[in-house]
Image (cartoon, rainbow over all chains, first blue to last red; front, top):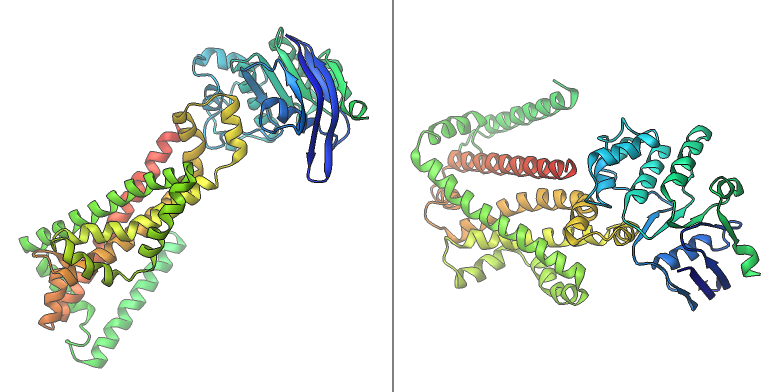
Length: 193
Length: 249
């Protein structure tokens, strides 16, 4: 079922971040939340993930099985790449994880501690972890942050191939990201107005 | 040999030399015995069967007290972290234990316990607030964003403990153990000196004071320092290995 956002409002103190947001997020498709900085994209994502309560309004049909790439990677730095991916899904075999790591150019980093990786590598680990977790919905908060052009294309292809039939809600500043993934766009600034 | 180690050895050698000079200047063994005499007395003591039995007596009790404090301090910290009411109601006990002089507890506990149980209880009492406070601080400093991540990926309690809490509390746990180990030994021996349980290191120190055997007093003091430091190093080694193993999982 499609996710329906109805009259959603959220303020932090005096500042109203979200004002009467209405939107439909189609099941099994990629939807991008776009808009300028501070318009409330991450707040909306956090409300959908259940971390922030809306002041008023409602969101209907949010699936239970969630997965996410957070704005900060939120990886366990002192553990290996493999452990970080397995912690989101115990049933994964090393072979499957290795295939996914190879798809994003991290096949040689599997046993390395996350703390030893570069920012771009950590981002890819966070993405593979989110993809391999059991999920009905995937939240992506600026998933391509810190990736160079060559890696960006590789990761976008990986994401397209591995999110078929999955409901994806992505926050991004770049219209090109949305276009590359063939995503529906919700412009939060327009909604707020 | 690295520079820091060389500097440490140099500092110790200088301190021993100054001690020797002070002992020679005073020229009165009862007041200040020379390091050479202490070493000589220590070399005699280590060949006495009673020496090792005495060390074992105190070691067993102080170590037991420390480990009981480690387990109970950790459990109490978890309870306080999960239930604020536990933190509120534990606060007066922890504050009183922290503020009360060891001697007051020792004298009070002598009424309740036998003198041989005393070092266990006093070592426990001195270590438990440090372990509790440090562990609670560690749990409270857990990154809420990491807990959100754990919620999204539906971590079990065991997984949360392994991946989120253990790395967060590691430094607090290590520092709690390091501080409380030394304090357990100091307080445990102080309790033995007051309670004078038969066959304890505290009893040996008490007798040395009684008979003005300064060489024995220094010899036993050096022994206590060595046992305490070696035990601390062993515990720290085991803790670091355990955390290392967990991270390799």
